[in-house]
Image 1: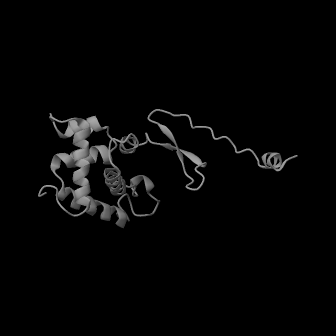
Image 2 (image 1 turned 60 degrees about the horizontal axis):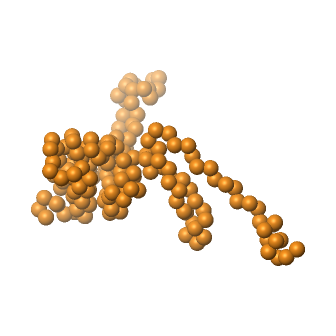
Image 3 (image 1 turned 90 degrees about the vertical axis):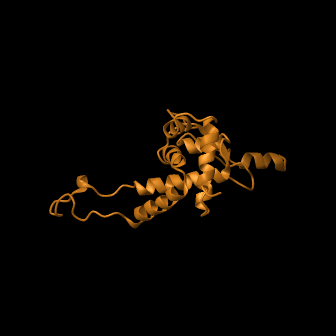
Length: 175
């Protein structure tokens, strides 16, 4: 038996990964994880949020995606789960006893308010609906503007560019 045959026999067969079954709103892509060999792969759901799907389809740039992801994270933090009346413990003093906002929620709300002062109102509505609440591009633009001469994609890219400028500390209104 040659050395090559011995290596083939001794190396265990790599388990074949089965792609997950997509449900409604699920779009899975296969991506390679390992930088060295390029053989390790995983499946990533790009349909979990319209922002991720737009980036995977190359509709928005990496910089716009990073700004949109930060905006999304801040919106999720701002609306994060806190204790409410359904979490009452007997003898704790009633529905409103001991309720407080975590510092992360307060910081997220302040950061969003700073961004809001630097962004035009219509662009803010688009960003809030598209990035923050996960609406489709067309729905977000339709809510913000009754009629716009340019396409939906261009309008969303314009709003994300304004968010990028606001993240850097400059106002797009004055630019």
